[in-house]
Image 1: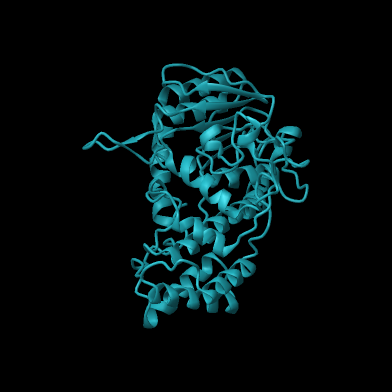
Image 2: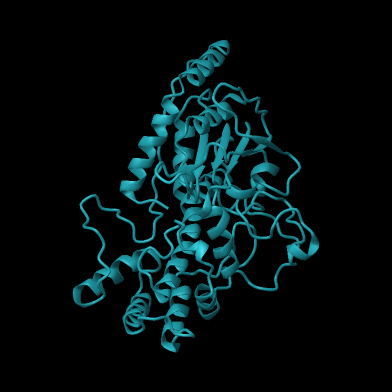
Length: 397
């Protein structure tokens, strides 16, 4: 969920953390020397517009939420780019913004014209597709609105970009639509542009060149989609390791036969079935990441087709129906090993073809130095221990 300024800041922090791991870099140099190969690392940060109404122009002014006059047209332009840039979508947005002014306090039910406007937006944004765990989206504006009114206060401070525009339930609903659109965009960009980029790099690179992919948040959907391809597309060769840091995708998305589902498999199950990663697949999870532990399941439940799946809570499943890899790791497969994330002086022994879920709460944590209280740690990933795990995944093949 980042725009250009956020991406620059995060990649600067992340690449600094990777580059500071001198011991890990020396180890991999020695390993490559034993194989009569050089080690020349190249770190590439792939940015994709993934924050609703984010700043994709370095010269853009801060967003104003004055919904009158020319500012209203500017807002419509901005929101349309993230949801659906059609005339029908723009008229729907105009109706929604007008209602957000008219109803200073949230009405008990969604006004009919607003409900209709949201139905138009959902149709124009083509948001009634499938999720990464095979379930179908069924977005009902009134149902989502009622859930937002009753929403627990603990979900108000978390950071997927939902509710960032204004403290207004009518506009908060627009934020949720953008959330699902960002997830859909992650899959589309990964399976098309990202897949094409990696394919071109593999074609021109020497056969001894290794490719290691790392994703964070929705970026885990991007890198998974790059590896998975689209319509049975295949990379030139498998990638050498895959690390999913605080992944905002379903814990069942790599599962070949999702528990108690009706013959559904996760959309990335072929990555394991077809050995599209030769080395290890490593995930991180942290109890301090409120965005994936609290908001992800909330947003997922709001968007699902109720009644399609058996209630996991009533069947005593160890894991919930709706949850993220950043909370539970990859589940529903036989190859997964659970470990605690190690400190930098302890080596891993990741094996090729295996999945490792790292419990990382000790290190992926964001504590306010003044109050000592834990805050959302979703973006607190530029840590030496996290970088140590990423380098170790590169060793394991």
